[in-house]
Structure formats: structure tokens, C-alpha cells
Length: 344
Image: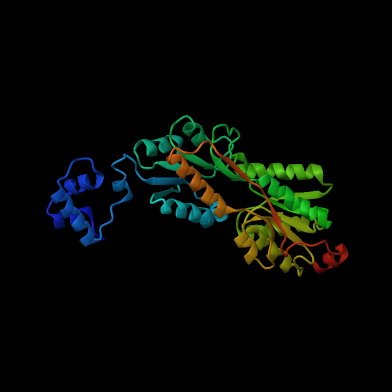
């Protein structure tokens, strides 16, 4: 791959002269400029995004602050990031993914040092210090998730509370009266990750509205976590006829637990919850789910930020509604005696 030094050598000029020609910071004679452009074409040299941005003092780089932790990366991962990256790349901008925890002051420094021109904040919490410091600045940012105080913020979010409510309502309408609820870890609620907080509100509302028994137990993020938690719930509550899960890998573990007891889905147990369309469609049986539209959220987040960079966007707040898609993993409960006999 050719470098700016190669271009300078081919054109017979200094590296700084090539830099000036690319950035427009100084006047360059037409003859020298022609030599530089000819060298660029011969060497197939592509200036960096940072170099193209020198003229307007912009980095031409977009940041995504996404501290990667296995549970949330499993849920959001490639679908959100892939769609956001495509929108950003189509705008001829570069992308920097920050996978470590970035402090509010570090984010400010990224802007002040012209490392980035805008940023998408992920794993937004109800009281997020990154949001608080950026809302008092002029730096463009978009939240993937909501804070408790949304005044003046631009965000896109999914109604996780409604999704949980719809999953439980669906099972209730099918006739299930005792449901195993595989909850998110308390730690995610303690740090006030928005998804966990709003999911909890949906659960609380369902408890009020539906005369059912919800047997709640925390679980981790792996297939084995789901299997072990489902078995534990069934051991303590053999009357359970259905399960609600809140993230991608857990239903697979629940399916394994059910099959290990000689039972099947949905004949003996129903499973529903929140996952992505991709995971729901590739499961066997296909999962009834309130699908999280991650690709749409990635596209919207990137579009909102690009509008902010152009100075054309007001504070836009987009809450995507939940919609339960019935597939193959839910049905009316089986005869309790038949199911319990199988489970022995």
C-alpha cells in the first residue's frame, strides 16, 4: 500500500508539500499540484479520512462507544454495528469502535483533539455520566437507549418493557397460569442499564394485570446458564408450563432442559421472550418472540448522527414499539398430569 512518502518521492517534492496539496492549507503552484496528482494516480494512493478532513478541521471519523461485555454484545453485536457501519461508510466517513469503558472526560478529549466528529453512545444507563457531560457541550452525539431525563437528547430505543408485557400476555391468553421467568442479572439493574430497567417495569405491570404465578430467577448469558436455570425453576416449581426469556442464547438452553426431561416444545412447554428475528427464525422450533429490530436501530442511530453533523437535525427521540411474532414455540398448555409423567 502506497504512503504519502511514496507520493512525495514520485513527484519529487517534500512530504509536507503533498500534505499541503491534499489539505489546501497552503497555496501550491499548478505545476507542482499536477505532479502530485499524477503520482497519486500512478501509485493508487488513497488519502486517509483524517487527511481529507484537515481542510475543514474535521477528523471525518465517527465513534461508537460500546464497552463489550459478553451478554450485551451477544444481544446487540454484529446486527446493530454492521448496519451503523454501512451507513457511516456510505457517507465516506471512518469508524472508530471504542470497546473499553470510556470516561466522560475521555469522550470530551476525543472531540477536542479532533479524533472524532460525532459519537453513538451504547449501553446507555438511566443516569449516564457520559450523557450528562455531553448534553452541556456542542459536540454531536446520539444515544442508543434512554436516560431518565431525556430532555434535549437524541436517541433511538426499543420498548423492552412492552416486549416483556406482550410475551407474558401472550402466554396468559393461551391459558398458561404458572410461568418461569429467566431474569437478567441483578448487576445489570444495579448499574441501571436501560434495557434491564425497562424490562423489569414490563414484568411488574404484567404481575398487576394478569392473575398468574410468575416464578422469577436470574440467569447468565450462555446456553448452559439457560439450561441450568430452567431445570432449577422446574425443580422448585413443577407446575410451570411456559418460560419467558430475555436474551438470545437463553432459549437454546431452555430447549435443551426441556428435551432432557423427555418433553418437547410447544407440546409440553411453551417458550417466548425477547430476541432477534435471526435467532428466532433459526431456532428449532422457531421461537415466538418480540423481535428486537437491531438493524433498524443501527441505521436510525447512524442517520440521526449524520444529520447532526450536517447541522440539520433537532433533538429526535425514537422509541420503536414492541411487536410479538408468534412462531412455533408456544401453544396452549398440555394436560398437567401427562407433562409431569414425561418429566419423571
